[in-house]
Image (tube, rainbow, N blue to C red; front, top):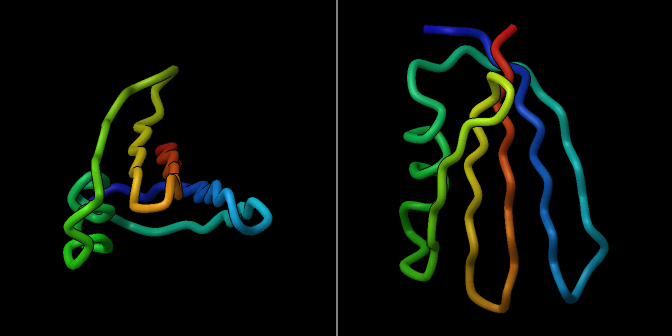
Length: 73
């Protein structure tokens, strides 16, 4: 398990954008995000790495986008 700072950004065309920062111990950041959207059949995932951070992006119905940036602490 590693400890991460997680920046969650939600981009919603019908509501204001939001940003939330938390800390959590995880063994697999991608699996963590996929588990949150396991009941959303429309969710499309992409995973990238940038400057040591893991970025998981999720696009759902109605063009709602979620971006989770995991930076190891």
